[in-house]
Length: 337
Image 1 (cartoon, helix red, strand yellow):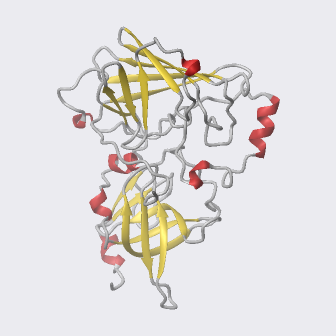
Image 2 (spheres, helix red, strand yellow):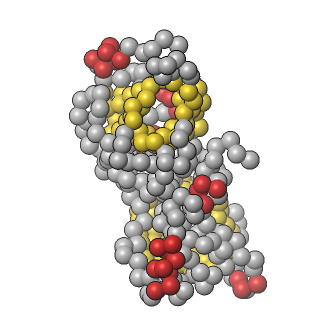
Image 3 (cartoon, helix red, strand yellow):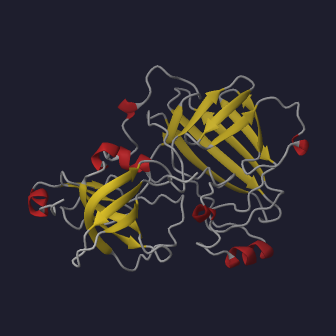
């Protein structure tokens, strides 16, 4: 393919901008002290969670083709900003600025991407490199006109109400032993994401992707993507202590008017978060999803009690809205079995 002439593109360009940070997947492997510019042809696109990934074919000055792997931001962020998978289809020629991985030399984290039609996508608070200064829409709450019409109640798809919203537990009250264990954690070598392992509870909940509630009679399915689900059991007949431990745990729910209360135990997952905070087998989660009177908002609250890690319970809240956004596949390693 002939090299793209960017002068014509930049003459009539526009910018898509996102300045909020989405903390759901470690970025520790990327060198943010140095930015690298690339350009070339997209030869493959994975449009899913936790990040879109692209393979870029470049031809450096010495003439030998290189194939580089690019990691983008969250799909839901890009789609709210008007970016669609077809805009990044195979064969598209793009210009990219990003950060090189210190662990995998052929991998880059995208900061800026200039599309063929002149749109510059700015990710993770990046500033424009090739176009005019954009309008900051980091507080966008999506387009309510896209909300699912005719659906009321809990059982539908819910999205974070604002870009960048996430669970914030504040400063964690760690025990002395937990502090030591967290200090010993390596953000690359000990990160399950680099072993192609999706998180367990509660670490999966801070992910900023849409979620869906499905009525299954005596249980509720909580889908965090097309591939990551939780089951909320509405029957309290079974003693949780005899249930096998899993990384999502055993969740029991009950209705209190418009509120779904959930208690989760029997969690077999070593980390509380993406930062190496340890988690013990004694962890217990208490969650509530509260539907607003008009059915347009869903308030989520989670309290985590873990005497082996925290000196007191920790709590966080976030708000969801019915924006009609789709669920996407969730794969740490696209293409892996």
